[in-house]
Length: 326
Image (cartoon, rainbow, N blue to C red):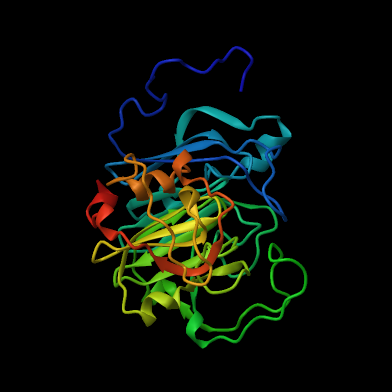
């Protein structure tokens, strides 16, 4: 930021949104991104996205990885400009001139849903978090539609060399489904380096970094949104999701809460039973999914054992199905 600028100590209205009615805000940034684990010394990525009542998206903050969706990041990097203190609108044509109805933000990437149920992603994509058919070595500077998803029920284990943080040498080959024709996404959320998409019939697809956060039963990252088959096997309909640094939470239609990945809130679970102790913080009740999804401190994972598949918490009464949107 310019040397003359200092962080305000009291709330101030965001420049560029003075005449807009904002209905939703997504805040991203933090430890991102690279070919290996995130590093605290990485390039700053903090940014904010705002959705207006007319379905337009505005961005403000860092644009070092294209997370503001402006499309001119490379030109501005050559000029030494990497941050914006005034919100600017993402061109509607980049969303096919459709009204945007939902937003989510990760460490250095973002996702949006339109009124027709189409999903768009942009920003950093080196861990597969954009859900495009092929890896993005650096970043995608403008919103790009997710055209395909995978059905993980028809796959064989991928051949793999190297650590879990590296992509499989031969990716899984499940059935490809053309999302642009058959999928209507109703919810979207982002973890630090992964993305979760929920369809209108309660199915969940995940892509990106994966130490269990995608709930697919293995630690291999995915470049296409892949079906979380465990929920179908148990007859569970998911209505909301949230992503943390290395884990995910899911809310089902009965009010049940599920987690996968590294155990949040300092859970001490028995690996054999996968029954973590319930959270005790009163601040979690009723707003848990929103807080974790925005990298709230209560969503930082501990070093407790992790799970590669979604596990239902034993106390579903602490969260209600209506709380996630409230």
